[in-house]
Image (tube, rainbow, N blue to C red; front, side, top):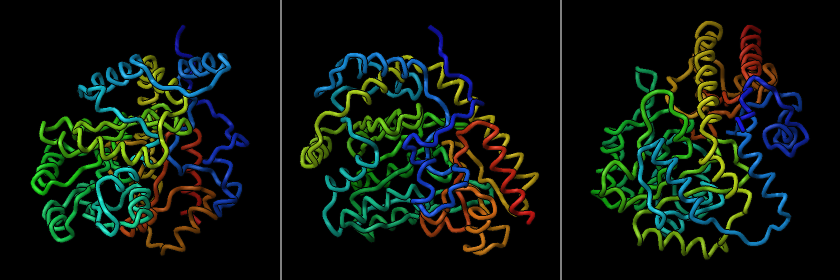
Length: 393
């Protein structure tokens, strides 16, 4: 049976489906008629093979305690090997109900209250939340926007922050959300060598690893053998196949001691087996979802090209940061000269758009907006037209 869900132009009404993206505008302080392009999930139907696998499993009618067996790991292993050249071992795998949950467990496992944890602002805001909510301190090696319209790391500052703050744990976002960088092997090696020198544990959030449009994603653990001793690699099919509500992620911890500490925190949190539907969906995605994945990736690439041309030609004062990875576009509105309240009014009240305002990713994001481009072209076009009209007003 062939893949059925390849019409990415199809607009599905997600209203009244308990959809966080579409059904909670009023509760989140937004007008009810906003067009939502904020939270990182796609407006595409997932692979029909995943649908079929879930329907078949639901037909069994019994949903007791479940656990993944060998075919599950084999599907995950083959996906990682084929797409990222990484040979993973089954004993490295720890499954969690999401990557953010894994980040929180890492904070508990590898630091103590009042310790500092290093990250690179502006960055996916739950990074800061799980650090602070667990009684630790956020320290930032802040990224800077270069003349090439890309963000870069300040390696001298990175090492200084480690030394000055006695850093034991660093959160890496690769590819980076929201600035869209796909870090090069050279950048990751320079960063990794500093962490190895100071024995800093690297938790690498690689959930967007399957969305690369320029360059090539490098799994941090696979760059140098020594890095396996200091890293936790966080992956999931949830972004790639739009399965966020399935609440499952594959976390790889090659080092036995790090893995043992991490698993102790899982036990303390009362986590054992995950939901059967998440396990079924993941296995089906990695085993049979290739055709859907490639078609979806091509469609988003075309969306990004369309958006780049539109911004350059129609939105004066707005600049789209050079986009290498993820489907989340980082838009720089600072050239419009609008103040923070004026920009918010432009986006929400005039444009009737629900985007992610840049300052939630750190103060360094003020003046920016994150836009989710994983939607039908007609929806993206409508959003950009709304921005154009709002700016003209």
